[in-house]
Amino acid sequence: MAESALADLVEALRRLPGVGPKSAQRMAYHLLQHDRSGARQLALALLQGAARVRHCTRCHGFTEAEVCATCLDPARDAGQLCVVETPADQAALERSGSYHGLYFVLMGRLSPLDGVGVHDIGVVPLLERAGDGVVREVILATGFSAEGEATAHALAQLLRERGLAVTRLARGVPVGSELEYVDLGTLAHALVDRR
Amino acid sequence: MAESALADLVEALRRLPGVGPKSAQRMAYHLLQHDRSGARQLALALLQGAARVRHCTRCHGFTEAEVCATCLDPARDAGQLCVVETPADQAALERSGSYHGLYFVLMGRLSPLDGVGVHDIGVVPLLERAGDGVVREVILATGFSAEGEATAHALAQLLRERGLAVTRLARGVPVGSELEYVDLGTLAHALVDRR
Image (cartoon, rainbow over all chains, first blue to last red; front, side):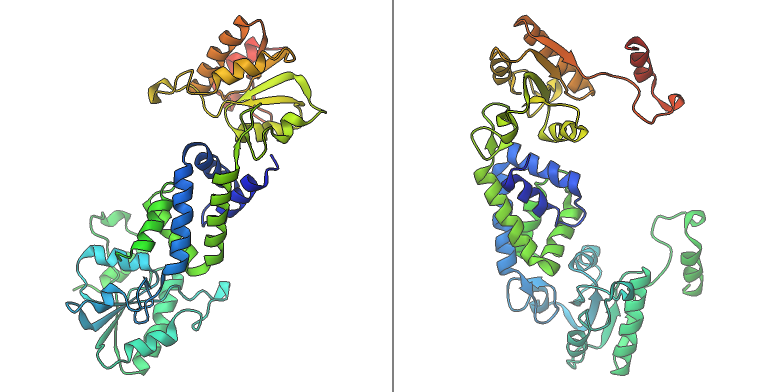
């Protein structure tokens, strides 16, 4: 079984997040046995992606141009800037259909235990971006995990120091929940923030 | 978010077995954000694998040569031929360290519901291989699922018709099990096959 091309492929597949040795082996066997055209197509997509995708100079999200389509959209409210951790979070907010401002993608969040500090995420570009004189309100939409909350807290301080209005997504009871199954922390927040 | 290189990459990653839209997105973001060298390395490994890996002409397993290293190993007993469904099964038997004969890899198993019949798996090459005059015993090591058992049953008939000795891996209680937790079918087999 010491065939180098096969072993190299299994090893390379293991670099994908969430793929262990068994899954990598299964993927390699599947591609080689049933889907060589898929393997070639994936290879091409990887090379194209690595060569062409870069960060939007305004929002830091992924794009192939200098500035992404969202940042260039004149129909969007340039006075609102929503700060998210990842492009996936941005996509989720877009799907909600209720936000029409612009975005800033941190591409990470504070995680002191992993050595990710305030300068490892895009804080300096965010402060520059938010200080363009057009942005009136910065909406912090980092996650509600411990790291996401810490990130929002740190950013809120830095942004308020620069005289910007800072808001945070509301905490509360998710749509469709039965109260008896909602965790206590969420219920407490929903009570405090009642309207 | 309609960037074509990124969308193409997510789409291509979805062709990997066990990868849905969310995982594919996560993989793409991870590679582009944190591991572009990994993306290029994976692309290269995919191209190399698709170009260089082929089937051993004797055992049908994956190899880069005409005949794989296992089939060429003179220390192995050419009188025993173990039939497995996949290279992963072969690797598992090798790790057990208790088999020293040769292998034949079916690269599949009967699955009538999916339209996989006896000629879609490597039956004809197996019959040729097993009828080389050197093989004394064919050990059927297909899985113990319904499809694996059906495959073993069909192969046993065809091989016995050609006058070959055919055996099947033993069914019984797994090492380390408590009897009370072993399923009834396994217990019944272990009783019948007691020694």
